[in-house]
Image 1 (tube, rainbow, N blue to C red):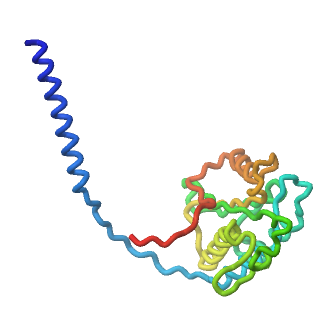
Image 2 (image 1 turned 180 degrees about the horizontal axis):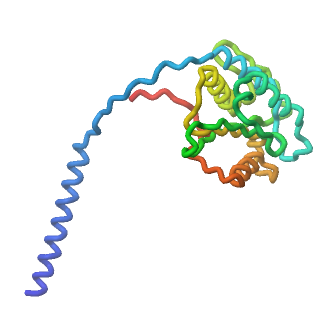
Image 3 (image 1 turned 60 degrees about the horizontal axis):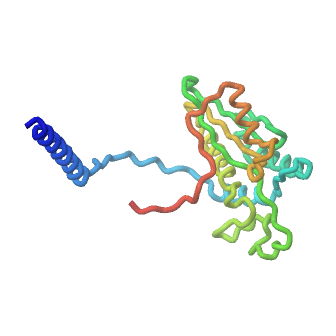
Length: 232
């Protein structure tokens, strides 16, 4: 009798568990997420022509990285630094700027609320070289920054001067509109991402600089995949 009671108890437990699982499955199948209504964002002012011109000119600067610092053409990176100063006067007037590890840049825009952790927006200035013997394989020269009216061609157009110039353009436009962020914003632009396994890595130097200053970030926006149009 005792053995039978245990069997019945076990059977009841299994049946109850099965019933609960079935109920949960049915509930999950019938679940429909409540649709929320959001206020649409106001239309942004975007100076697309300026962005295209600046990206094209940024590509023309042959900021090629190399695992050996002695083989880096540092004058090209100095040119790129100067280019950013000249094209984005408000960014360079409102933000502090430091050169890190000889070629990387660290900008900071102070926020109005000191209790909020800052965010960081990342990009890199360097590109990989064109392999010798492949120069004629390019539709347009690798450092021409050619704009055919639809695409901008060249090293860095996707990896990743496009994002760096996009960040600078967006911030310049926001500053023109009188924007002051609630939380601080760091711009971290590396000079050797393509060969960052080296001991002189600009990214590592920037991280160490922020760590030494006790900076903790709320969020980081870095290089990612393509932006695709998705119909939902």
